Structure formats: C-alpha cells, structure tokens
Length: 264
Image (tube, rainbow, N blue to C red; front, side, top):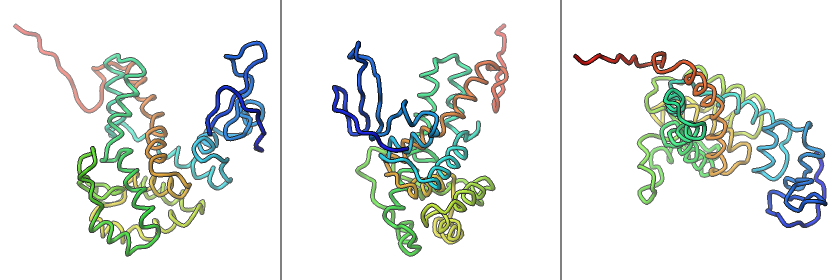
C-alpha cells in the first residue's frame, strides 16, 4: 500500500480523511486512513488485522508484524466457555438479550484485572518499564507500583500470570512458541526463554494475558491500545457462543442444570 495525498475536507481527524460525492456533501466518495486510500487501493490488498494496525499505529504493518497480529488474533479469538466474558455472552444469548446487550456483557466482564483487558494493560506497562531485563522484572514483581489511587481494585496477583494455575498450560506455551518464532522484536523470544525464571518470581504460571501483553508490546502498541485490542480480538468467541446458546435454550446451558419444581 502507498499513501495517497488528499485535499482538506469538511470531515478530518489525524486518522481519517474523507472526500464527499460531488452531488451530495453528506456522502463519502473516498476515504483515507492515515493517507491510504481505503476503498480505492487498500480494499482487497490488506487484511482486517492490517487495517487494525494501520488505524492504531498510523502505518501499515511489516510482513512479520502482520503475521504476529494474525497469530495473536487466532489465539485470542475464542477464550472458550470457561472464560467469564464468554460465559456472560452465553447468558445474554440464552436470556434473549439484544445483540448489543450480549456483547456489552462480554466486554464488561472481560475488561477486568483477572484475565481481562485491564490485566493486559498492567502487564504492558510492566514491559515498558522492564523491557528484557530479568533483574528489573524480579524487582517489579517483588514491589509492584502502587495503584491505591486508581478506580480499579488493587491487583491481587502479578499481571500476566495465572492466579489459579499450577503450571503453564499447553495452549499458552503453544501460543508463545508460535509468536516467538516470528521474530518480531526481542520480547517474545526472551519471554519464552525466561518463562521459568519469571514464573518462579511470580509464584504463578504465565497466562494468556501475559503472552498477549508481550505480543502487543512487541508490535509497538501502547498499553491503552493493547487494552482495547484485547477486548476486541476476543469478541468473535463471544458472538459464536452467544448465538449457539440462543438456539439451544436454557435447558442445554452448560455447567449448571436447572430443574424447575412444580409447587403443590
């Protein structure tokens, strides 16, 4: 993709530029994302994750960056029905909630500090502070930053690590290995190598949120951007499970069997 110069128009942000149709000033004739002609040149040439990268970073991804973001998107696409955010979407589906309400439930539940997007933000802040310095990571884990002034509850475990885990799960190790092999920055390969030492310092195994934080940091996203992307990339699973549960009904809701007793 090559950027295309555009003329100033009525609608303009640093992200998006539009030209109107000659016969309708309220209709878009051409749209440019950071200078790239979205419908005239980018459409058909770029993937959806390429577009996400362009929107947030202001430039198209390099081939390795594009592959890493695609791998991350696949790894996060469906956390599965055990995940609280997916479970919330399933509850919305089985209750007949609107699509917007169902996805809002998934976003709200998946936004927190226990496996959610807030945890990814905190882990990305740790990456920015510690980089690939093991001693700095150990010091950060031993004395985390004070978050007492935050509106969020005090974090009860090291962000990026599983507070309930006994060992690093197979899917976390597989995801980390696949991303580290793409050689986008030093973070992921370093994390794969130093995982046992970091887990020993944290007293907990690495979690998927920790892998996602490392990947998003390696891609150059800010912590705030990473928090948003983590929420967004997990929505496909919420959609699929909510729609399935809508069809199955409450009698086939997994985990809990509901028996209604007839009153005498």
